[in-house]
Length: 415
Image (cartoon, rainbow, N blue to C red; front, side):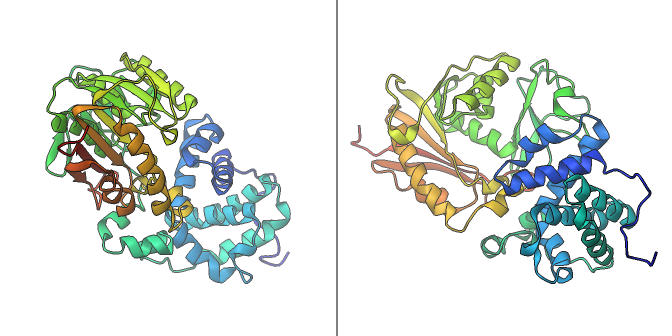
């Protein structure tokens, strides 16, 4: 046999199940799924294979622009001409060969087996040929490549933030209190800019599956980003109350509600999705906190019978562009028109929630987005209210999500 005629590899070789799971998860992302949900379902139970699936899937999503820059010159008809399973397999192969520690020949050989496992064995020759050329390519170094063009333009002056998006996001835990059980080796107190967040800790890289870590099953802590923790803490600072009565209007999955309740607030929760509220209830039960909840669609107006509150927290649905380090598929999914489109919904939700703020109370508006259309533009639009407080983690501090929060109070003479 002449060299290059047939994909190389030992007879009877099989695709590693972690690699196959990563490929299937990437295909699911292309169809609108969320990477973490898909990986939770598809990744193998064996730790090594499960870890590989997560590493490869999220790695490809983080570095897709760089990977495609390598592949594009090698596919004569263009990447868009490839069937989705073939393109996904090629992306996995390039990422593994050039951006991880897998030997080049092993990455190419396994990619051939992956495309066969996906039911496209007829494309194995193409996959083999392209990858054997790709391993000799010079890897582009510009971090902006790993963003779609419209975000390249928006974030070009944030080089530190853009560069960190290429790396796995750190994972943080929030303890129910100073004496709550937590994993060993985690120091209490995480800095966010000039602030230290008490009972927040960073998990060491490679800690393993969160549910298996010390203190989690016992309800000692939950996972939450520091910027999100600080938004919850601002409810106390801005309301000037040690134990405010709080409505968390868009509460699920419940991290902010748990933080508020663990610090002495009386919290009532709402969310559009009963399924997401069920997840919130599970989290609250595990941690041992009471979080009464009820589903409501704030786009339809105020919630009858909800009453009034010292603080109404509206962590509104948004583009999520501040969380792209943890959810890298978001950057490839959003369109340039999405921030303005989301702002229209956010304004309606904020107006509905405002009816539940007690006289002299605080209306808090927050989004895990970096974009001005979803931040100050929405907060400034609510008639009869002034912005009394604001905090914006934009561009995001290293290791934290991009977040914006605003504290609104009724104008004098308002009801």
